Image 1 (cartoon, rainbow, N blue to C red):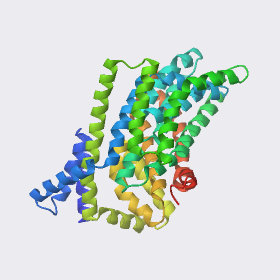
Image 2: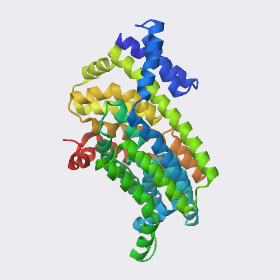
Image 3: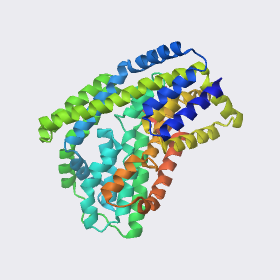
Image 4: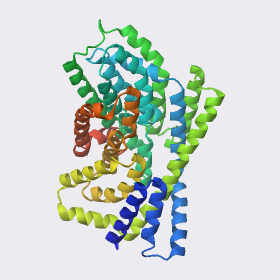
Length: 434
């Protein structure tokens, strides 16, 4: 029954996605079709409705709409230039200074805004004129911008990690948030390394003159209010002062006050931000609710157990199993967004990795890091295409550079997968996990 149900889910889901049905409806319909193989129609519909309600009723889920609203307020609040100047003051001496600055600013802005595409658009626009003046290759600039933007999705506050916490059965959000720092930094450092190597080959130099503490101090003071959002919210959550949901509400108030101080938020823009945040939140929350049907079907038909048995039938070596999972996730990420992929693959793979002793926190970071690569991978790759549009270039010109960035980012994925300390060291040091 498990294999039959799995084939039904995969088949119907694939067909619906190919013909353009929204992912939430596709998941719900495919899950309902699988239920009908074992449960009568009237019972199936009632059960599906109950599972949607249960999936959307979690208090922790409230954090997602608040963080989305806070991110949209920060996007409007004019913080991108301040972050670009701050990173440039620190890293500007490296070869290809604006490429490196683009990468570092993307990591910071993506963490604050919660959107890789927003980071690629905002930061990319900020540095593009300078890159053009210095004669940088447009395709290289677009590749560095797109490749580095998803790094901010790993650095908290991260909606992807909150979603994983919910679907994994309540993994500590505070532990996941702390665990995200090193993988996010690794992603950014990998991109910086590639950018510096290519910049040296092309003869792109850093900012001339000596390092200036005065410029760094000025840039830091300007960026400090924006950077403080991360310190206040994450520090409060990790320190147990408030929950993730309460922290998200504080982030909204902080972002709104900051936007008003900077005078970049008007009444009209605020109304637009509220509407956009409500639409995005509704989509994500409904998707989580519908995905709860799928999780129930998988548990009821014992699909995870069947997949576990199939994978263990191939090999019992945990290193090979993790490699197989990574390949599957990389393939899925090329056509599926991060949130639905987390909702689908967590209940499939988490029981397997638990069997050979992998901590759910480490798996959550491996899963999220892996799926974030899909943001910059064709055919979907929304963030990559945003970077290409901002850079005024083409996919054909960008891809040769992207291959080098992919190689470095995948090396980071191997570290997150096979070196537990990469994601576990900070939560363990804080006493959040043993």
